[in-house]
Image 1 (spheres, helix red, strand yellow):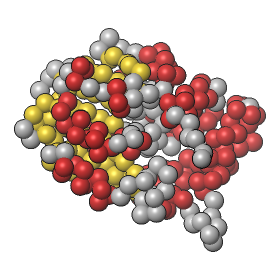
Image 2 (spheres, rainbow, N blue to C red):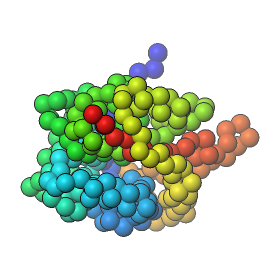
Image 3 (spheres, rainbow, N blue to C red):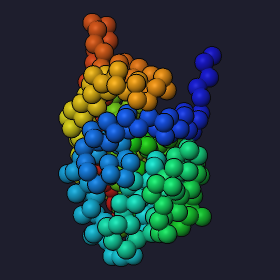
Image 4 (tube, helix red, strand yellow):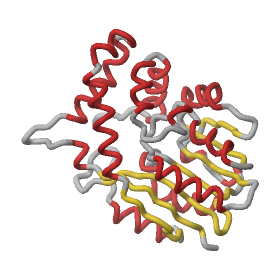
Length: 263
């Protein structure tokens, strides 16, 4: 039986590596799809139109807001929130290295960065006007249960926004179908306000990112050293094609969901 390493340890390594691969980080930021978050060291692929949708939600709530950012990474989104309007943010991530870097890079008096996983989110944190989870909720061991938990942390009329991946083939990281996510939202008594298929943009940016990495592999290795090899291997595997295993990116879809607690 193969034992999987805890995700927190995997991401600890990833965020540690990012400290020592500035050329790779620059490529990822340049292909993240937005300017506002990339400038704050966010490599998550999130388009300007998606950021505009999120901004409208933020502005629709009365200030001051309480926001929970789940899977905050380097804290770029948390910092963006406090720059938009009067709010306070609790930002959590299971990676200790991510939290350390987030405090250094995007620290702010109105942001509380905490090392915690999904199971560490509970009512002791209080209630929130907005809960956001970019490219993280799908990694939870029990996403169905976490949706129900998040509803309990929302004020009536408040919003849950998250992104997830789905695959008909059960690809790792996209283990569940869109149909399952829709069903879980309904079971959690969360009303879907908008369900956006952002697959096309995500695939385009991913191919640009990983294609750029591979085309500049020699420069990356010269600049960042052997530590960058694992990232280049990821890029190679994502973009490979064969008769037996098509393009991996083509088998995964990405969605952006806004749901509301009605009562």
